[in-house]
Image (cartoon, rainbow, N blue to C red; front, side, top):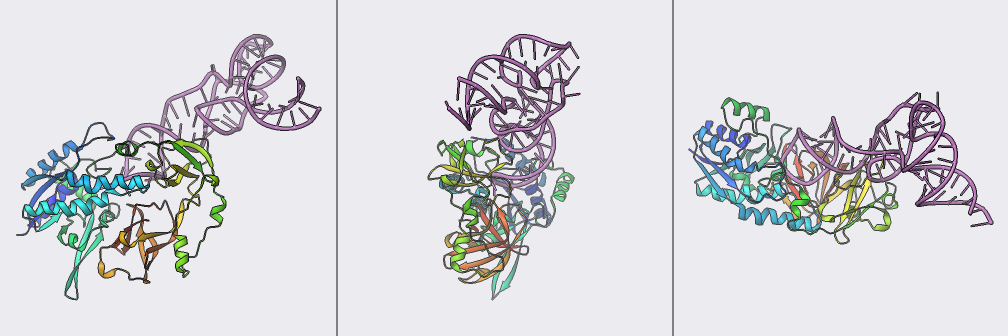
Length: 398
RNA sequence: GACUCAGUAGCUCAGUUGGUAGAGCACAUCCCUUUUAAGGAUGGGGUCCUGAGUUCGAACCUCAGCUGAGUCA
């Protein structure tokens, strides 16, 4: 009987996942991890994370499986939270949960699970996995969850074959309403619990407040760039099917760089690094016909550039770039070689409908050209590439 | 110095031949969502520049004043 350690979070998904494993005949062990103790900037009054361990334990008892806890907060702080602050400081917008999966749930957590005798590790993610042989070698595939609405494969876009090999996703084949139903049929304490939100283990925080722990406030100006600003008309654009030269690729992939003379001052902010591209709320600038969105932040000069309306040219871009050292293939056998190209589906944020795109690999990195212009392409976020249902790679947007 | 125009929610403005006010943006809350965002719903908020007058009744009419913008000398 194979031993599987399931990460019990105190939510429904992992509860039901544990039950499914049990029914499938595995030797199941529940392991709860506590990764964060601070509550700075936490929203929602009381701290719901405090109850999580209690719920996890209740579920383990109900399912009659051993229950353990582990404190990985030191590693979490070092490998996820520090990265977060560092990225924001650089003016990028990180995705801590993608890192959390790569560095914690499918790394140090696996180590902890192994100490309990785990041969496999399971989580309550909505995604699927399968495997196949090629040239005598086993390859693992990360697939979207059967519940299209809940598919969480995006958050696992940085996993390796090694990590995938150990992983099991018991609820990947079923839909959320069914998960709820199973939980309530089993009378699990977590059946009615609200889905968790916010940063994994940290919770729903007010970002500026949270970031102020380590990042200083610094007053600066908000500048509005008109829709018809000259720099937009000078911008290179190209048809999706065109065959671009390398030089054109480099141009089209570049974010817009603004200067104060390109627009006019419309307000004040407390630190450009507290904002992200595409953001609308929190600018505190009124008197406009259409809402103002952040187009760009300049960390050096501490300026937030904004533009009016969803269709602002500065907000919608055709292409993005991923550096070689920030490019990751879940399926190394499908990695594009330099000068190779492939049409795939890409998403640049969780739950975004997949977008048709051309991936062009060059010596300097990977260029992604979208069929439709994309809103809020943001440096530091992850672009994930799908071949049908399968997530084959990802990278950090430069 | 004269004249013209303007002064209405935090901002930009609309408004009824006179019956005590609205829209967009901003903001708040909730929903959605294991990132950042976006999106959806709901909501709070106004001595209608000040004073006097006309009127049953004025933010809308009259007069004076204050403030701002502009034009002409």
